[in-house]
Image (cartoon, rainbow, N blue to C red; front, side, top):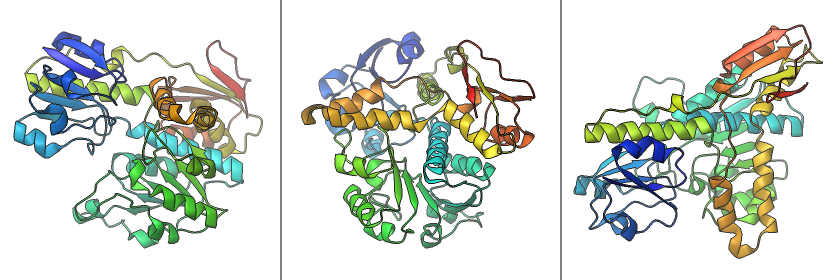
Length: 398
Protein backbone atom coordinates (compact mmCIF):
# COMPACT_ATOMS: atom_id res chain seq x y z
CA UNK A 1 0.00 0.00 0.00
CA UNK A 2 1.34 3.43 -0.97
CA UNK A 3 0.87 6.31 1.44
CA UNK A 4 1.63 9.95 0.58
CA UNK A 5 1.92 12.21 3.63
CA UNK A 6 2.63 15.86 4.36
CA UNK A 7 6.14 15.99 5.79
CA UNK A 8 4.98 18.29 8.61
CA UNK A 9 2.61 15.74 10.16
CA UNK A 10 4.63 14.60 13.20
CA UNK A 11 5.49 10.90 13.57
CA UNK A 12 3.45 10.09 10.49
CA UNK A 13 6.04 7.59 9.22
CA UNK A 14 6.16 5.74 12.53
CA UNK A 15 2.37 5.69 12.89
CA UNK A 16 1.55 4.49 9.37
CA UNK A 17 4.59 2.27 8.70
CA UNK A 18 2.64 -0.92 9.44
CA UNK A 19 -0.02 0.04 6.90
CA UNK A 20 2.27 0.59 3.94
CA UNK A 21 5.16 2.51 2.38
CA UNK A 22 5.10 6.14 3.54
CA UNK A 23 6.47 8.87 1.26
CA UNK A 24 6.84 12.36 2.72
CA UNK A 25 6.18 15.43 0.55
CA UNK A 26 5.83 19.20 1.10
CA UNK A 27 2.13 19.78 1.66
CA UNK A 28 1.79 23.22 0.12
CA UNK A 29 3.17 22.18 -3.24
CA UNK A 30 1.51 18.75 -3.48
CA UNK A 31 0.38 17.97 -7.04
CA UNK A 32 -1.58 15.30 -8.89
CA UNK A 33 1.40 13.31 -10.19
CA UNK A 34 2.58 12.66 -6.62
CA UNK A 35 -0.71 11.09 -5.54
CA UNK A 36 -1.64 9.30 -8.76
CA UNK A 37 -0.64 5.82 -7.53
CA UNK A 38 -1.29 6.40 -3.84
CA UNK A 39 -3.84 4.47 -1.78
CA UNK A 40 -3.82 6.83 1.21
CA UNK A 41 -3.25 10.59 1.28
CA UNK A 42 -2.48 12.41 4.54
CA UNK A 43 -2.61 16.21 4.49
CA UNK A 44 -2.89 19.39 6.56
CA UNK A 45 -4.78 22.59 5.89
CA UNK A 46 -2.20 23.92 3.39
CA UNK A 47 -3.17 21.32 0.75
CA UNK A 48 -6.28 21.85 -1.37
CA UNK A 49 -7.90 18.44 -1.85
CA UNK A 50 -10.26 18.40 -4.83
CA UNK A 51 -10.76 17.00 -8.34
CA UNK A 52 -7.67 18.71 -9.75
CA UNK A 53 -5.51 16.81 -7.25
CA UNK A 54 -7.30 13.44 -7.21
CA UNK A 55 -8.89 12.84 -10.63
CA UNK A 56 -7.54 9.59 -12.08
CA UNK A 57 -5.72 8.65 -8.88
CA UNK A 58 -6.09 5.43 -6.90
CA UNK A 59 -6.54 7.25 -3.58
CA UNK A 60 -9.26 5.59 -1.49
CA UNK A 61 -8.76 7.22 1.92
CA UNK A 62 -7.75 10.75 2.93
CA UNK A 63 -6.85 11.86 6.42
CA UNK A 64 -6.43 15.53 7.31
CA UNK A 65 -4.57 16.12 10.58
CA UNK A 66 -6.59 19.27 11.17
CA UNK A 67 -9.73 20.29 13.02
CA UNK A 68 -11.21 22.00 9.94
CA UNK A 69 -12.00 20.76 6.43
CA UNK A 70 -12.51 23.94 4.39
CA UNK A 71 -9.54 22.85 2.24
CA UNK A 72 -11.33 19.66 1.16
CA UNK A 73 -14.03 19.22 -1.51
CA UNK A 74 -16.25 16.85 0.46
CA UNK A 75 -18.83 16.54 -2.33
CA UNK A 76 -16.18 15.31 -4.73
CA UNK A 77 -14.87 12.76 -2.23
CA UNK A 78 -18.39 11.47 -1.70
CA UNK A 79 -18.97 11.16 -5.44
CA UNK A 80 -15.75 9.16 -5.75
CA UNK A 81 -16.48 7.02 -2.68
CA UNK A 82 -13.22 8.13 -1.04
CA UNK A 83 -13.04 7.71 2.72
CA UNK A 84 -12.23 10.83 4.70
CA UNK A 85 -11.42 11.80 8.27
CA UNK A 86 -10.20 14.87 10.11
CA UNK A 87 -8.93 15.26 13.68
CA UNK A 88 -11.68 17.30 15.39
CA UNK A 89 -10.61 18.80 18.68
CA UNK A 90 -7.04 17.51 18.38
CA UNK A 91 -5.44 20.93 18.89
CA UNK A 92 -8.32 22.63 20.69
CA UNK A 93 -6.56 22.63 24.06
CA UNK A 94 -3.41 24.06 22.50
CA UNK A 95 -5.40 26.86 20.84
CA UNK A 96 -7.17 27.66 24.12
CA UNK A 97 -3.82 27.87 25.92
CA UNK A 98 -2.58 30.19 23.16
CA UNK A 99 -5.48 32.56 23.91
CA UNK A 100 -4.71 32.38 27.63
CA UNK A 101 -1.03 33.21 27.04
CA UNK A 102 -2.01 36.17 24.86
CA UNK A 103 -4.32 37.57 27.53
CA UNK A 104 -1.61 37.10 30.17
CA UNK A 105 0.88 39.05 28.06
CA UNK A 106 -1.56 41.84 27.27
CA UNK A 107 -2.67 42.11 30.90
CA UNK A 108 0.96 42.76 31.80
CA UNK A 109 1.55 45.13 28.88
CA UNK A 110 -1.57 47.22 29.42
CA UNK A 111 -1.78 46.91 33.21
CA UNK A 112 -5.08 45.15 33.86
CA UNK A 113 -6.17 42.03 35.73
CA UNK A 114 -8.47 39.65 33.85
CA UNK A 115 -10.76 39.06 36.86
CA UNK A 116 -13.95 41.04 36.29
CA UNK A 117 -13.32 41.65 32.58
CA UNK A 118 -15.88 40.44 30.05
CA UNK A 119 -14.91 38.19 27.14
CA UNK A 120 -17.03 37.67 24.05
CA UNK A 121 -16.49 34.19 22.63
CA UNK A 122 -17.70 33.89 19.04
CA UNK A 123 -17.92 30.16 18.36
CA UNK A 124 -18.40 27.84 21.33
CA UNK A 125 -17.24 24.52 19.87
CA UNK A 126 -14.13 22.50 20.70
CA UNK A 127 -11.86 25.53 21.05
CA UNK A 128 -14.33 28.14 22.28
CA UNK A 129 -15.63 25.92 25.08
CA UNK A 130 -12.09 25.26 26.30
CA UNK A 131 -11.28 28.98 26.17
CA UNK A 132 -14.35 29.65 28.26
CA UNK A 133 -13.39 27.19 31.02
CA UNK A 134 -9.92 28.65 31.33
CA UNK A 135 -10.98 32.28 31.35
CA UNK A 136 -13.74 31.67 33.86
CA UNK A 137 -11.10 30.11 36.12
CA UNK A 138 -9.48 33.58 36.14
CA UNK A 139 -12.72 35.22 37.19
CA UNK A 140 -13.63 36.54 33.74
CA UNK A 141 -17.24 36.75 32.60
CA UNK A 142 -17.80 35.01 29.27
CA UNK A 143 -20.48 36.05 26.77
CA UNK A 144 -21.22 33.37 24.18
CA UNK A 145 -22.36 33.55 20.57
CA UNK A 146 -22.85 30.45 18.42
CA UNK A 147 -25.99 30.52 16.22
CA UNK A 148 -25.59 26.94 14.86
CA UNK A 149 -25.33 25.50 18.38
CA UNK A 150 -28.14 27.71 19.60
CA UNK A 151 -30.36 26.40 16.79
CA UNK A 152 -29.85 22.84 18.04
CA UNK A 153 -31.80 23.76 21.16
CA UNK A 154 -31.13 23.13 24.81
CA UNK A 155 -28.91 26.22 25.06
CA UNK A 156 -30.18 29.21 27.03
CA UNK A 157 -26.92 31.09 27.57
CA UNK A 158 -26.18 32.20 24.00
CA UNK A 159 -26.48 35.87 23.10
CA UNK A 160 -26.85 37.81 19.87
CA UNK A 161 -23.64 39.03 18.25
CA UNK A 162 -24.23 42.69 19.11
CA UNK A 163 -24.34 41.86 22.83
CA UNK A 164 -21.16 39.78 22.66
CA UNK A 165 -19.27 42.49 20.78
CA UNK A 166 -19.65 44.87 23.73
CA UNK A 167 -17.15 42.80 25.76
CA UNK A 168 -13.73 44.04 26.81
CA UNK A 169 -12.13 41.18 24.88
CA UNK A 170 -13.54 39.33 21.85
CA UNK A 171 -12.06 36.05 20.65
CA UNK A 172 -13.17 34.26 17.47
CA UNK A 173 -13.27 30.45 17.18
CA UNK A 174 -15.39 29.56 14.17
CA UNK A 175 -14.92 27.19 11.22
CA UNK A 176 -14.30 28.79 7.85
CA UNK A 177 -17.33 28.66 5.55
CA UNK A 178 -18.42 30.65 2.52
CA UNK A 179 -22.05 29.55 2.30
CA UNK A 180 -24.89 28.32 4.46
CA UNK A 181 -27.00 30.31 6.88
CA UNK A 182 -24.03 31.66 8.82
CA UNK A 183 -21.03 32.01 6.49
CA UNK A 184 -17.85 33.03 8.31
CA UNK A 185 -15.85 34.39 5.36
CA UNK A 186 -15.04 37.96 6.45
CA UNK A 187 -17.24 37.58 9.53
CA UNK A 188 -14.90 40.13 11.08
CA UNK A 189 -15.54 42.91 8.58
CA UNK A 190 -15.89 46.69 8.82
CA UNK A 191 -19.41 46.38 10.26
CA UNK A 192 -18.29 43.83 12.88
CA UNK A 193 -15.37 46.03 13.89
CA UNK A 194 -17.53 49.17 14.08
CA UNK A 195 -19.62 47.42 16.74
CA UNK A 196 -16.62 46.73 18.95
CA UNK A 197 -15.51 49.04 21.72
CA UNK A 198 -12.74 51.35 20.54
CA UNK A 199 -10.45 49.99 23.25
CA UNK A 200 -11.35 46.33 22.71
CA UNK A 201 -8.93 43.45 22.46
CA UNK A 202 -9.70 41.19 19.48
CA UNK A 203 -8.19 37.74 18.88
CA UNK A 204 -8.51 35.53 15.79
CA UNK A 205 -7.11 32.00 15.88
CA UNK A 206 -9.60 30.36 13.51
CA UNK A 207 -8.80 31.00 9.83
CA UNK A 208 -7.21 34.00 8.16
CA UNK A 209 -10.12 34.84 5.87
CA UNK A 210 -12.57 34.89 8.79
CA UNK A 211 -11.24 38.44 9.25
CA UNK A 212 -11.10 41.04 6.48
CA UNK A 213 -7.45 41.98 6.88
CA UNK A 214 -7.64 45.41 5.15
CA UNK A 215 -10.63 46.24 7.38
CA UNK A 216 -8.50 45.36 10.41
CA UNK A 217 -5.78 47.74 9.23
CA UNK A 218 -8.30 50.56 8.84
CA UNK A 219 -9.93 49.87 12.22
CA UNK A 220 -6.62 49.85 14.07
CA UNK A 221 -5.66 53.12 12.39
CA UNK A 222 -8.89 54.69 13.71
CA UNK A 223 -8.76 53.06 17.15
CA UNK A 224 -5.25 53.45 18.61
CA UNK A 225 -6.39 52.10 21.99
CA UNK A 226 -7.57 48.81 20.50
CA UNK A 227 -5.37 45.70 20.33
CA UNK A 228 -5.48 42.74 17.96
CA UNK A 229 -3.89 39.31 18.34
CA UNK A 230 -3.58 37.43 15.04
CA UNK A 231 -2.40 33.89 14.54
CA UNK A 232 -4.03 33.45 11.13
CA UNK A 233 -3.79 35.66 8.05
CA UNK A 234 -5.44 36.15 4.70
CA UNK A 235 -3.19 35.02 1.89
CA UNK A 236 -0.90 32.80 3.97
CA UNK A 237 1.99 32.35 3.60
CA UNK A 238 2.17 35.79 1.94
CA UNK A 239 0.92 37.89 4.84
CA UNK A 240 0.31 41.63 5.16
CA UNK A 241 3.26 43.26 6.89
CA UNK A 242 1.24 46.47 7.18
CA UNK A 243 -1.24 44.56 9.35
CA UNK A 244 1.50 42.76 11.25
CA UNK A 245 3.04 46.09 12.20
CA UNK A 246 -0.26 47.27 13.68
CA UNK A 247 -1.30 44.23 15.72
CA UNK A 248 -0.27 43.74 19.34
CA UNK A 249 0.76 40.11 18.92
CA UNK A 250 1.44 38.37 15.61
CA UNK A 251 2.18 34.66 15.18
CA UNK A 252 2.59 32.33 12.16
CA UNK A 253 -0.53 30.12 12.42
CA UNK A 254 0.81 28.07 15.33
CA UNK A 255 -1.97 28.51 17.88
CA UNK A 256 -2.69 24.78 17.85
CA UNK A 257 0.92 23.71 17.46
CA UNK A 258 1.61 22.05 20.80
CA UNK A 259 3.41 18.75 20.40
CA UNK A 260 0.54 17.09 22.26
CA UNK A 261 -2.05 18.50 19.86
CA UNK A 262 -0.10 17.68 16.71
CA UNK A 263 0.53 14.10 17.77
CA UNK A 264 -3.10 13.76 18.84
CA UNK A 265 -4.04 14.72 15.28
CA UNK A 266 -1.71 12.08 13.84
CA UNK A 267 -3.21 9.44 16.11
CA UNK A 268 -6.78 10.38 15.18
CA UNK A 269 -6.27 10.05 11.42
CA UNK A 270 -4.22 6.86 11.97
CA UNK A 271 -7.08 5.28 13.91
CA UNK A 272 -9.57 6.41 11.26
CA UNK A 273 -7.42 4.84 8.53
CA UNK A 274 -7.15 1.58 10.47
CA UNK A 275 -10.92 1.49 10.93
CA UNK A 276 -11.47 2.17 7.22
CA UNK A 277 -9.07 -0.62 6.27
CA UNK A 278 -10.26 -3.04 8.95
CA UNK A 279 -6.84 -3.15 10.57
CA UNK A 280 -5.84 -3.28 14.24
CA UNK A 281 -4.26 -0.12 15.69
CA UNK A 282 -0.79 -0.66 17.14
CA UNK A 283 0.52 2.92 17.47
CA UNK A 284 -0.55 5.46 20.06
CA UNK A 285 0.57 8.92 21.02
CA UNK A 286 1.23 8.12 24.69
CA UNK A 287 4.17 5.95 23.65
CA UNK A 288 6.04 8.80 21.96
CA UNK A 289 5.28 11.88 24.09
CA UNK A 290 8.34 12.77 26.19
CA UNK A 291 8.15 13.62 29.89
CA UNK A 292 8.13 17.39 30.30
CA UNK A 293 10.52 19.16 32.66
CA UNK A 294 8.80 20.64 35.75
CA UNK A 295 8.12 24.34 36.27
CA UNK A 296 9.55 25.55 39.57
CA UNK A 297 8.95 29.06 40.89
CA UNK A 298 9.82 30.84 44.11
CA UNK A 299 6.97 33.20 44.95
CA UNK A 300 8.01 36.53 46.48
CA UNK A 301 4.50 38.07 46.52
CA UNK A 302 2.40 35.20 47.88
CA UNK A 303 -0.81 37.22 48.21
CA UNK A 304 -0.85 38.06 44.50
CA UNK A 305 -2.26 34.80 43.19
CA UNK A 306 -2.77 36.19 39.69
CA UNK A 307 0.88 37.20 39.31
CA UNK A 308 1.85 33.65 40.28
CA UNK A 309 -0.59 32.16 37.76
CA UNK A 310 0.63 34.48 35.01
CA UNK A 311 4.26 33.57 35.69
CA UNK A 312 3.49 29.84 35.49
CA UNK A 313 1.43 30.15 32.30
CA UNK A 314 4.16 32.15 30.56
CA UNK A 315 6.85 29.76 31.82
CA UNK A 316 4.96 26.99 30.03
CA UNK A 317 4.11 28.95 26.88
CA UNK A 318 5.03 32.58 26.22
CA UNK A 319 3.43 33.85 23.02
CA UNK A 320 5.99 36.67 22.82
CA UNK A 321 8.59 34.21 21.55
CA UNK A 322 6.43 33.36 18.54
CA UNK A 323 5.61 37.03 18.01
CA UNK A 324 9.29 37.89 17.84
CA UNK A 325 9.97 35.01 15.45
CA UNK A 326 7.34 36.20 12.98
CA UNK A 327 8.33 39.86 13.15
CA UNK A 328 11.81 38.85 11.97
CA UNK A 329 10.16 38.39 8.56
CA UNK A 330 10.87 42.10 8.02
CA UNK A 331 14.56 41.21 7.73
CA UNK A 332 13.87 38.81 4.85
CA UNK A 333 13.71 39.67 1.15
CA UNK A 334 10.13 40.14 -0.04
CA UNK A 335 10.20 37.18 -2.41
CA UNK A 336 11.49 34.92 0.38
CA UNK A 337 8.90 35.90 3.00
CA UNK A 338 6.30 33.22 2.19
CA UNK A 339 8.96 30.51 2.56
CA UNK A 340 10.08 32.12 5.82
CA UNK A 341 6.51 31.98 7.15
CA UNK A 342 6.22 28.30 6.24
CA UNK A 343 9.62 27.54 7.75
CA UNK A 344 8.53 28.97 11.10
CA UNK A 345 5.74 26.43 11.11
CA UNK A 346 7.82 23.52 9.86
CA UNK A 347 10.63 24.14 12.35
CA UNK A 348 8.39 25.10 15.26
CA UNK A 349 10.05 24.25 18.61
CA UNK A 350 8.56 21.73 21.00
CA UNK A 351 5.73 23.21 23.02
CA UNK A 352 3.84 21.20 25.62
CA UNK A 353 0.32 21.60 26.89
CA UNK A 354 -0.38 22.46 30.52
CA UNK A 355 -1.55 18.90 31.24
CA UNK A 356 2.01 17.69 30.65
CA UNK A 357 3.50 20.04 33.20
CA UNK A 358 4.20 19.55 36.90
CA UNK A 359 4.35 22.85 38.81
CA UNK A 360 6.26 23.29 42.08
CA UNK A 361 5.63 26.57 43.87
CA UNK A 362 7.54 27.76 46.91
CA UNK A 363 5.63 30.27 49.01
CA UNK A 364 2.43 30.47 46.93
CA UNK A 365 -1.04 30.72 48.38
CA UNK A 366 -3.60 27.94 47.83
CA UNK A 367 -5.64 30.21 45.54
CA UNK A 368 -2.87 30.15 42.93
CA UNK A 369 -2.64 26.38 43.09
CA UNK A 370 -6.41 26.04 42.73
CA UNK A 371 -6.52 28.24 39.61
CA UNK A 372 -3.55 26.45 38.04
CA UNK A 373 -5.32 23.16 38.62
CA UNK A 374 -8.45 24.52 36.93
CA UNK A 375 -6.29 25.67 33.98
CA UNK A 376 -5.28 22.05 33.43
CA UNK A 377 -1.77 21.75 34.84
CA UNK A 378 -1.04 18.12 35.64
CA UNK A 379 0.15 18.50 39.20
CA UNK A 380 0.60 21.60 41.33
CA UNK A 381 2.68 21.34 44.51
CA UNK A 382 2.93 24.21 47.01
CA UNK A 383 5.55 24.39 49.73
CA UNK A 384 6.84 27.02 52.12
CA UNK A 385 10.44 26.24 51.18
CA UNK A 386 12.54 27.85 48.49
CA UNK A 387 12.21 26.34 45.04
CA UNK A 388 14.86 23.77 44.18
CA UNK A 389 16.56 24.41 40.88
CA UNK A 390 16.46 21.16 38.99
CA UNK A 391 18.44 20.46 35.84
CA UNK A 392 16.23 20.68 32.80
CA UNK A 393 13.39 22.33 34.66
CA UNK A 394 11.94 25.80 34.18
CA UNK A 395 12.85 27.85 37.23
CA UNK A 396 12.51 31.40 38.36
CA UNK A 397 10.97 33.86 40.76
CA UNK A 398 7.70 35.73 40.81
